[in-house]
Image (cartoon, rainbow, N blue to C red; front, side, top):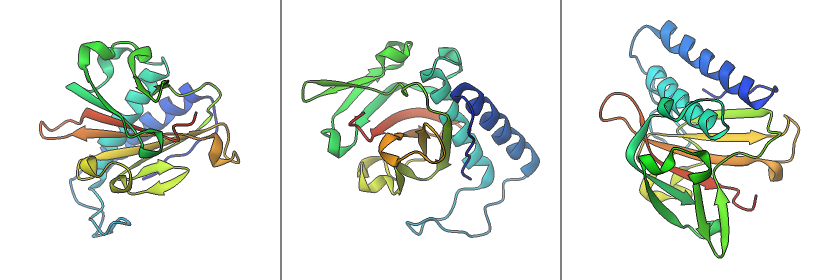
Length: 194
């Protein structure tokens, strides 16, 4: 399930989060998506788990954008922040408490500091479970194979529906669902040249 709107980022995220919650409530059962398959050939996750993952990713995105409080973000005790291979493939581990401020969501590589906070002016949001974005949909295995088997949501922000993909902001949020509710365990920042 992909979501796309052309309004200010905070409003987009609020609308998408509400739509996901309504969809999950209407589903009413835990059936899968009728045997559909992803590009990798793996089964599409059930509607409810996909919606819960997308909701958790959008909540994290809303926190990074300053729209919600830290306590609403479903984080594990330790979160791995990754840069895509083109950005050096750097990985850092951060304790949950160290991520209380969006400014702390950074990775340094090759003398540059890369922030996971989306730039201002992004009005179009796409969030989709089971994919990784870098302008287009990719398999997460093509960027960070060690995370590919975990539940994840790719998020792409652009400054408008017709904007060049070179102006996109891309991240993938990776979750642990063993406890029932998704908890963020890793994030991958792509299109690192921003």
